[in-house]
Image (tube, rainbow, N blue to C red; front, side):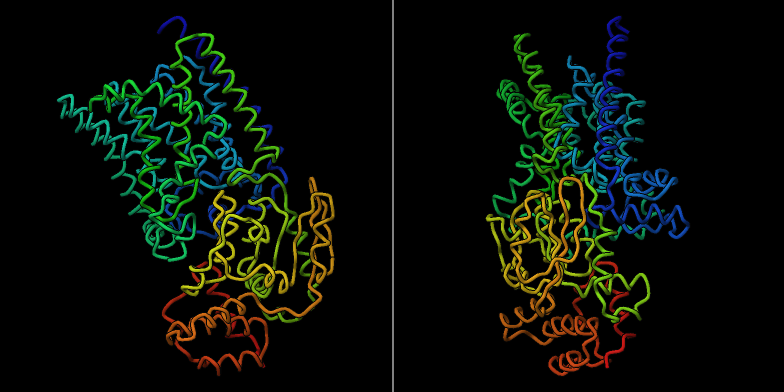
Length: 618
């Protein structure tokens, strides 16, 4: 060991410890009052972890093929709360720092690993993911660790490096089964490089070292978690047509092809993006002198790590920023490589100092709400109090026969809700809390980027999802909206408005046909609740009728799908006259065979539909 290595390691440990402490303190103040997650996936992880802890779930029956809930589970032993679960992200930071330290050593960087850690943690995408229960923050740390030992294996070709890489990769792979897309190009590049150097045995060793962990992890999943493997052939894939609505709809468009490349600049690096250009500039001479053997180098592996998911996932129509989040680490490593490529020591130090300042600025910009980052949520929405106010002012006895937990879903289903003034991640949280009721985010109507009605009116679908996907895409930074109802129709038929007022009071004056009935103070503002003073029509019925108007020659089977949506709405609203009229109009009787095409795919709908057989409708 060199004499300088020990003090350097001490400084790295001290620097990373200080950085971890600062991050943890800021994290604590951001999440201590959190009461909601923002969408379905975090609740699936949370509810399963809590269910296993309480003995209500069987450990091998999780519907998503992931071991992630088992990481979260110990954190819930002191109380199953949102803040408690989110601390899994802080626990992943030391793993991330250790991985960065090893990566920096393999790449022979001079920059302290604590500085690299600061640059990584400043990524707007990672800041957002650190405040959510999506798997990708932890996955980024686990895969960075695996890749550090992959680089070590590239250099040494030893069994120890291969085994440690394999163990780390198996854990990461079992955390998320799409992980191999991050390894395809690095492995292929390294194998091609060794073949070009006339080292076929080394190429074979590389393929074995990468392939064996995949086989092992897959075998474990097949044996232990077999019921969950269907997830990637249904919801997570594209067998459900409306999953295409996440991100650009036109699969083969330029916008879709460049989606993840834009994310590198917008949410991976943001203010640090020019330094990635610097890395590309310094890589220019090597590219001009390129030979295939260079693909086996550690620097090439980092470039291929960044590009592998960005290029491969172009072919997948469902696009979302977090799907490539594990490539934030190589993007930052290339930023550091670009800075270290500067030959003048003073300029190099100035560039590194500039990068550190910019990193601090963008971290603060996200955490202080100056800019929005995907998945970032740092305030309580006081939803328990909000819901209590909405329920106590609804005097109808319609919901009394509904048992829990269907009672809450029954009430939600019957509500027309519109929201406005919320940050995008807050808005999505409210949309999900409203399930299966339809919740429209009025701010998506005000976004001038684009509204399209061809998809919603080409094929009839669940309006909860069609309305919610707009908020989902908005929080991911994608502003292309699926138009079902006009803003005027949404506002006119909103039974409840939930408005976030940052202090001006102007937002209340925009809705003269709604009466204010409650306010809830929150950090940096007030949430107002308004109820309609005029009769309303269910959003679902409005969409269904408009769909029928646009398709006067709809075939019988599809007409039945639309008719059952109208019938379900009437049944749950307790309107016997409308129930009978709908049955006559669409030829639907109590023993009618359900339509072959199911639009009620989200868990919770089956119990609600079963409830309709028990409700009195006359």
